[in-house]
Structures are given as structure tokens and as C-alpha cells.
Image 1 (cartoon, helix red, strand yellow):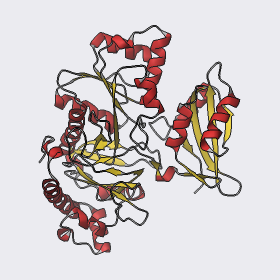
Image 2: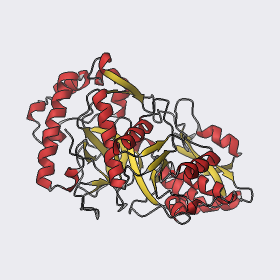
Image 3: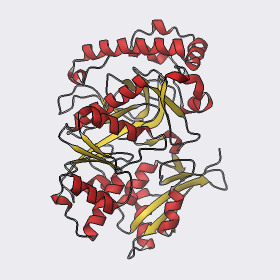
Image 4: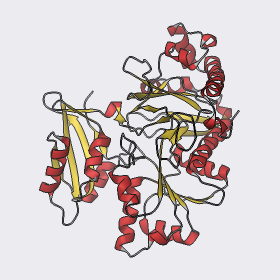
Length: 430
């Protein structure tokens, strides 16, 4: 079924032939076993057998997150006795979605991360420290763990938080690679500097950066990425994934976008009318999964905005890549005629030396328009006026800015409905 990564270097004809064969298998499986897709194909007048190539996918209406929330169990394609594990989305944008995996899906998930680690340059000589959640139905932690096992690397499940423990583990076990949220890596460096820890003397050579962008739209390192590499001689690799996709897009050493795994999915960028956009144009990422048994998805609109990078990579791979995520469609903020996305606001706040941490809240104002409030936990010598001036100058609009104690801010970032800490809080009425 899988190619062990050789497809990455194939010519366009070989890639298309492989992709179309896998597409036919996925469509037939969905038509045979998914109540949702049987109904969708019927109502759209689509005969899956007549979808000959990915060019024909435009005949099929996309699937949305709302579909998954409303008809979750209708997507299941195997009986309960064949489900090996239940995972769940975080519920960042509404009700969590259950994503079941069969034993074959678990093997596919491990292969997905194996391919990512190959692109990063990891091997069986590495020690990978997983600075992330591995419980609470969290698929990503499980994927990294099983991917590392497949490639032969030793794993250290250190979990999130506790900088002192993380550094002790790094030096005691000879960690060579981390999987961590970039903003937490900055906190690790701050802790090390404050406590005289010589991190330059560690064996860590690369970091898989999860959950946050480390690059801007032009693929250069953003402020948070620069904050890391300016202090620590490590290679940073961005990765993007979602629980529903069961697949990741991960950067190679060239750092020029997340590579598509052609064995595992087909990616397209859609406009607001569900039409594919040319490579290079920004729109919503939609994916069609290959080889998923328990919950396959066809033209699933992820809600994330990015573009396809189609020119061959410097690493020699010919498969397409995706740019950093510009923002989420559901998180767009319209403030006084200006369109904003949380990543752009975060990038500005990450560059303000006055700030210890922050949260961005959007609500519905008195006139029914978006109202934006930025809560700032300041450093001991930080100035609210200076931080406010920096933010308003960079945004070119004036959100409300409030100082907030760090403990109160951390409570604000943690939602009982979500396992993730989030700096974006959406309180808008529907």
C-alpha cells in the first residue's frame, strides 16, 4: 500500500497515476461503508466509479466541520469491534468530533509520522523528547510516539510544562530532538538563561514545532522562530495537521513549506464557491484521505487558509507543499473595516518585549460588529502604554487593550471544553 517515501521524488505522471488509483479506492470504500457519503453522492448525482482522477473531484461537494459535528457517527465505516482507538478533536471551533481508528488506521498514522521524521532527518540514532500531551484522546502525541518507534528512535514522553524537568531530561538522557510548541521552547530558553543552564552544550539538534507557526507567508522565520534560532543553534521544522486528517504536512531541512504525503492524501485549495484555486493562490485547504478505514473524508474543508507551493523543493522532492497557515476561516475578525486573523495579531504581540503573555478576545459589539480586546500580562518592567502603542501601530486599528495578571490570563487561555491552551477566545454571538 505504501511507498516508504519514494513517491516524493517521482515525476508528475507517476504521481498522478498513483494518486488516481488511491482516489478510486477511497471513493469506493466511502460509497460502500459511509452512510454520510452514500447520501452525499446520491443527492449530488455523483457516481464514484466515474470519478477518474483528482481533476474530477470538483464534481463532489466538500465536507465541512459542521457536517462532522452534526452527523459524526454517519461517517464511521467499520463496526465497533474493528475500532482500535477513539480519538477526538479539541473542540476549538465548536463541539468536539470523535475520530475512530482501526488497527490499519493506527499503522497508517505511524507511517504518516515516519515519513515526517524521514523528511526531518531523524534516524534510529536519535532520542526524541515529546514535550506534549499524550492523553485526553489526543491523536498527535500518539502519532509522534508511534512514528518514532517505526523509525527506530528512542522516545521520551516528558509531557508538557515544567522547564526544570525538561532540561534535566534533555541532559540526563542525551535528547537529540524535541517535539514542542514553539512558544514553550522560548520559555525553556528563558528559564535556562535565568538559571545558568548551558543549552548550547546539549545534544539537541532539531525541533519539531507543533501547534504554532514559525514562518511567515514568505516562508522566512517569523519572530517566534527567530527568537529560538538567534539563541540556540538548532534546526526548526514546522508541521501542520489536524485530528480529522490523520495526516501531517512537515518541513524538510529546506524549511520551504510542509510536504504533502502523496501516499496518504490529496490536497487542494478552494475558493468560497468550492472551486479549486491555482497553485500559489491563498484559499481554504481541503483534503481527500487515502487508505483510511474507519473514518475516510472526501474533499474535507479544514477551515485553514494557505496556498500550495508547487515548484520542486531544494531537497529534491517533487511533491507539492503547503505554505504556513494564514488563519482559520472561522476565526476571521473584521475590525473597523480591516480583516485580521489571530496569527497576524500573535506575530505582533510576540515581537513586543513588554509582554510576558497574552490573550486575544473577540466578541459582538453593540452594533453587531466584531469587538476586539487584547489582554496583556506584562513583564515586571513592562509598560502597558508602550505595549499598547506597539500593537495599535502595527495593526493600524485600535483594539481595546487591558492589563491582566498572569495567573488570571492563564485561566482565560484554558477552556474546560478544550484540551488545548488557546490565546484566541471567540465570544461572538451567532
